[in-house]
Amino acid sequence: MEHFYAHLPKAMAAISLLLWIGCSTSSAQNLEGFWDEITERIEQKDYLRAAGSLQAELRVNAIHGLLPRADAFSLRGQANLLLDLVGVKIPLAAAFSDGDLTYRLPAYAFYGASPTYRWMTVHLGDRSMNFSPYTLGGHSFRGIGVELKPGKFYFAAMSGRLRRARAEDAGAIQDIESAYQRNGWGIKTGFDNGSQKLLLILFQAKDNPHTLDLPDTSLLAPQENLILGLQGKSRIGNHLSVELDLARSAFTRDSRSPDASVAPGSLSMRMLGLYKPKYSSGYHNATKLKVIFTPKAATFHLIYERIDPGYRTLGALFFNNDQESISVGTQLPLWGKKVNLSANGGLQRNGLQGGIASTFRRFIGSVDVSAALSSKWQLNAGFSNISNTNRYRLVTIPVIQVDSIALLQTNLSFQVNTTYLDGPKQNSVFNAVFTWQKAQVIENEEILSDQSNVFYMGMLSHTLRNAGNDWSFGTSVLAHATQTPDHEQWMLGPALNISKSLLKEQLRVGISGAYSLIHVAGKVEGRILDLRSEGTCRIGKRQHIVARASGVWSDTGSASSFFDWNGLLSYRLIFK
Figure: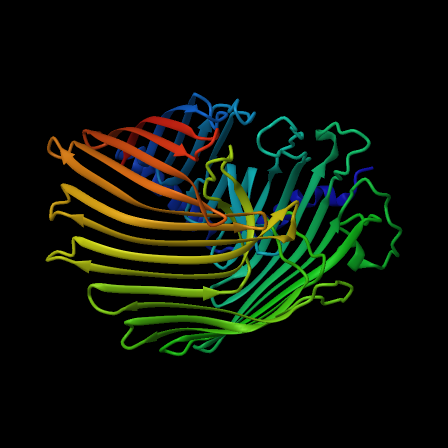
């Protein structure tokens, strides 16, 4: 017999909508206004408005000296449109690519639309929604979602596929691991008038064990997750506000494990009767409290956050747990707003329940400064040791076949950027950039403490344009370093680019070149010459054709030297 919580999404959605329709005194007026606008647009024969663009690409690749990095020919298409159908706004995004035989990847297509009218939004196709960082935190899904904001009330819901099933492919160039199809649904509902807020969240994600046929020796297990969340906000007076974010997660490591016997009164284990406990289930909490003080001249805040060891959500890309922190911060304009300071600082610890070998008690902080030193000189600098998670494309190592895209947790970062504008119309731009990052690799939702990476990047550049922007000339010098536990590489070299408008600005052509020396373990191991050319032809006001060609020559003084040629032909249609 199916458990009653399987019907909960429909029940909660129906109850919430009925309550709001009954409570909203303006619903009839909204509907009347809705039909009046549609009627007016129809009478004016103003049925459809469109903005955005459509684009189609043909890519060509040829390589000598290495195994192919891409197919010889590939097709791609994308659309980014904002349609207005008699008053209903419909953001539409779509992307398409044919299959990649080189990487043994299938063709893909992403498409999604979010029709919006006044306080109603519907999400269709490949979309993302954000309930809270501890529940559904911007994870993309393929399915349907809705957001309703009638007056002071708020209702959001989603249902769809969070991840498609994939079988392990040991013969692929990239390491593709098995994964079950993961489906999820969620509801967020409550009251929000801007100064006061109370929202309830329910989110569930579950792997489907029938989407893969795996051998008995496989260690892959289907997982299940249900989270109850609460968000609150209260503004006290004109300068003080308090925000609260709570979540309790029930996470089952293997949904095939036997049901756990729980006392009938154990609502915490059953998540208010919405969850079936298993022997592999765990229950953990997350709490965040934020107090904000906003006097006239600045903003100050106090943040306390605690995330239990083992807290997991299947609605986020990656989630740090087993940590507690308290911090204070400010956003402060100085010297007549010529300098803006943003700073955070506090204490953080892990090992909240003991039992781990590696514990820390550390100071965490970040400082960002932006300064207008003069009308021509801008400066930005920042430092942070607050952890955050991102996908990084590592700089290509020429002797390796594949560009690497890794999921990394950045623990330390520093950057400084300064720009100086010169010339009578500030058409001569000097720029200097330096960044430093230290990060650790994340694999299978685990941080690899022995996979620490350090990235350095420094660049000096100058760009000169004439007053009418008919031509531009740019030079730069780039230095980049990547240090991993088993590899160290430096790349250093100059670059040059020139572009010019022709035929009364109907055609724009450009060429660029870069030369780099590769240093490995302190020795020059190779040289790279990168030449590129591009032409953009404008046909009328709404059509563009782009042709691009590039060639990379790598000489490492060994059998791994290669030549890589790429071409692109693109057509773009613009709607205004």
